[in-house]
Image (cartoon, rainbow, N blue to C red):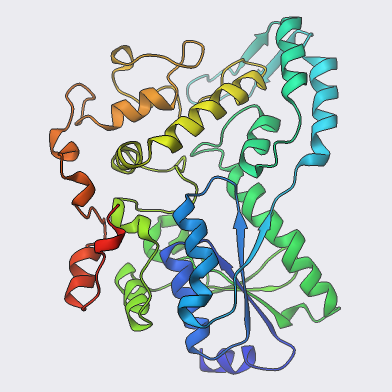
Length: 362
């Protein structure tokens, strides 16, 4: 570690810190600052973040004296014309899809999709123009939302823009010596089984070196780094959120969605509008933010996307106890807005350390 710390301090080495606005990337930013490095923090804006995350990203340099965070965005505007042509030429035809054998269908299966009515084709073509929001544009082009098994959002909205807009130009500037570009990534082994298998070092497609300096840190270590530098974490961590990336994230759990629906119903409404738009851009005529089988009692909720359960229904289900039948009154007390619901015990922790989160509870 000490040898590598000396290497990244050398002239000509560019340290690029991937920043998401979350606890881990903030700890990474503070670590680079603590070591006295010259570094370049970069935030890939998905267009699907909370306002408090945007504010946190834009003001962190003022709180720390570190470098201002650069903001990049994916741009899909050049893909819409080709998609319109595809819809015009193909949606009016019958589509046959042959699926390979799997456990559920040992002999495979053949699915025939009927032609799409011309009225729906015309409407999809009418809508198929860039909105300027990367997340919504991507979902319109895909005709669906990301899912736990198809997380194309991370690849298309974060990884690829970072490679194309930041890493490749940085490597190209240094010619063949790509090892002088260091990509700092704030992933931790504690977070998942897949991340426990990661190495501390690697290489990205650009040829730059990937470094994961906090791979063996716990979340207590991460928040200790915040306290050490007198930096409050992203305020959303005090409001029941376990993750602060996309808001909401397709990976968020029931309690997180419950907090979002209670505190920020406008974000639920925004996603509901996106469901309608993406549905009209889908050959199936249906696209829900969460899987339609998200709830356990589907007949207990009103449908809102052509007979399917949209985010309104799932948000209602998130307010219930296990089984989806009875509302959890403990989670919806009149004093909820005054309660700190941090999953990491931050309120108590920060109060003990003479910090206050009183202004962050709403």
